[in-house]
Length: 369
Ligand code: F6P
Image (cartoon, rainbow, N blue to C red; front, side, top):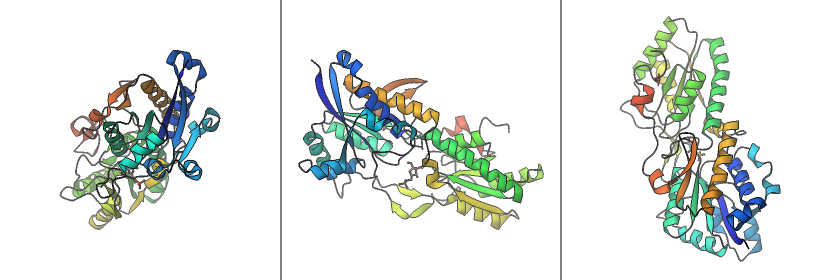
């Protein structure tokens, strides 16, 4: 006789393509009848809605509250989810361990009241941090890494990154057309927070001649020199791909007016506009600025994100079967493995400037000098 096991799954933090694919395959693996004899387990999968908020607000004795904050997942329901971006379970940026408003005990209580025996958390650095703290409070937690920023350590991949790189690349292609027609400079700002991976890899894919990343402070005069050099070489236009966390030497990051999120991080944005104005002030070039903002997180997942969602979702269920708790699924050297959350949270995965970045010409080190 197989033992019944009820597990929960939630997504927390910024959405991205690939999350729904992970949920789809996690449910398909958990509910695969053929695997029951081998596992000795029969799963029931409960989706928690709107991230941690679902487990904070839930009043499990009330039917309407259960309907509002949870969703029983089966293969029929999630059948087509793998091909859609975002997260069908919803998400929020709530920090349950906020010292000014600590709601972590609601989560612990609701986990127990729901009868959960494991929880899969699809999150980035901050929310896998929450998952780790809850694990230390006794919850059986498994993590799936997702963030377009690819700034989580101990994994070579985080869901959403490839889709975002593809979007930035095709947007740069579009901008090239109008930039070329008008002989203009375009400053294109992408996301990434403190990590330059999105700018660097989309820069490689699109061939943007100047890429500015948070890990190396740039000089405005040097950017202008590089642009002038390109003009002398006969280029009608230039694209500067700048990460939202990049900053000119001696200056702080540029923040939006919205302030900070629940984890204390400033919302970044605007450095591209600042740079565009500086170039116009200090040269005779005509400059335009485009911030790609949340367009980078929208749309359908690429084939790679669907595949990785599949692999991460299936691996999360294997981890539960193997009682591999307090850990995160990870891709290392092309293989799916698991790593301790504690280790993954020790530091952010930032671009190693010496290895990957040309600090003279402000672009990927693999390009011709
Ligand atoms: O962490 C993912 C990310 O897209 C960052 O690149 C960006 O700075 C941030 O989220 C934006 O957050 P929000 O969606 O809350 O505006």
